[in-house]
Image (cartoon, rainbow, N blue to C red; front, side, top):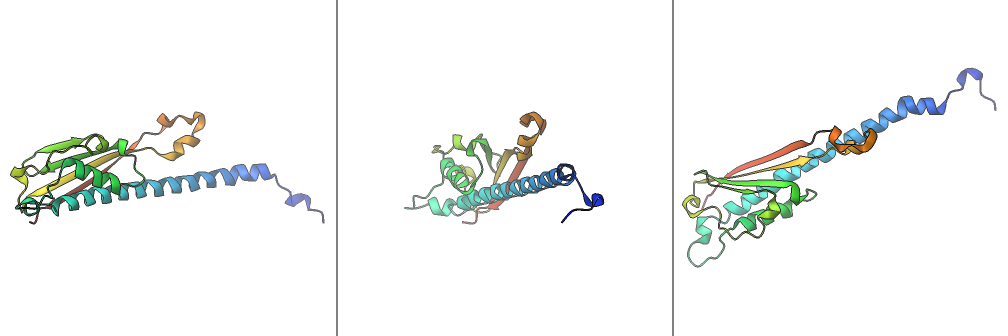
Length: 168
């Protein structure tokens, strides 16, 4: 069967006009999904670190119990719950009501810390603990940019924050 001369087209031209923009949109949607998954995972990891801390409050460390929390314990909980996030790029800050702060930049720098946290002056029911984190997210679309220069796209800083109260 022969084609009518009016129905002939150029496959390369049609792909250039339709295919390339569709591929770009597909990659952009996948990049946005990866970014949102990273942000959600980071927020959940920070919340798990805070939950771990508040469930091991002053009442837990009193008497014969030996369940005091260290900065290393909290950093390990956050790292273990941050699946897919490079621990070497995740910065975490632990704060108390009195303003005492412990910076873990990156979080892996604190995993071996044996410092008790929160400090004894802030480790009582009713006090809040604050854990915040930041992560520099690099968009994957940069690898498709002409020249492959990833500095053509600025990184996006994702921030996570949680405040929880020691209840016992």
